[in-house]
Picture 1 (cartoon, rainbow, N blue to C red):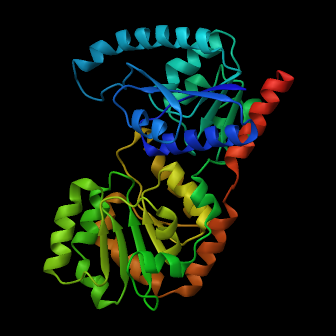
Picture 2: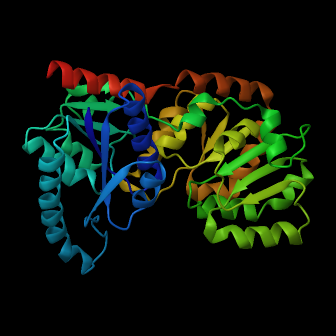
Picture 3: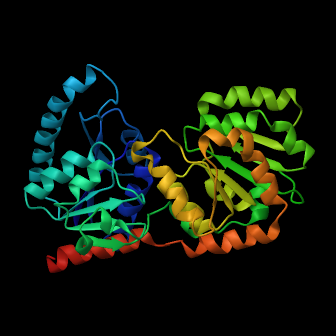
Length: 367
């Protein structure tokens, strides 16, 4: 088995890509896996750290404003396609998998033209333009949500769910383990606020301006701020003397312990974050980022909130209503239990293994 996996740019693309690679390795221990990413993006650091080889393409996205960088884009695309052609000829993969991100477009497009088997993995409930375009030539499209036949050829769609990190899939730690790890008390309700690896400005500002409410209501907070706001948050926690209730972290590497400790989660609505939340089954307040293509985070959040599996709070409203929504949910254990049941029903565990099943079918049957 020889596989190329292409994509990246954010953890939301990279974590599923690595999960798929790990599932291929688990089934085919002698397999060869090569990643294709974009130069200067985080996959060039994260993928080697996970033990896989990666090649970087000189590809970038379209700048959504008047910029000289856009003039260079056609040349970057042509150069990337030439490089991909050489990689495909030299490596001769059995399968080429695209997970989204800048690099997946030239890789999947060239692979399909050259006659290689291709699989597209769409993480969101509303696909972006790139994956809509790539879907026309992909052999199989693995999705996480129902209803994507409106965007992709229905006969190519397989609902597999989104691959998530193995430690989240297993979740073999308890609430007590999480509470102990973060230096919290077991007899207080605990909230986890996380806005992705880089943080989320509006969520962070909401919390920063309401820190006293955590002490006043005896609620504990595990707060991932991202690097840019960590020092400001830490200073304010110290000045208000709420450090017993609020634990500030620039980045949480052991998310399984944070999820285990939490009674409620406040989160952006990226596809992989949602897939993890469905598996851990915690009540969640989703505050979608408005600064993403096709406003797909809002559509992701609505897919849950419409089924009573999450509470959706708009980004421009969260400062006024977000913390009170959290306190109301803490005060309503019946609502929390119902949300937990509803969100667990939307979980699709072992997605990476299901995707490898589809790879097997493609390779072994030629369909």
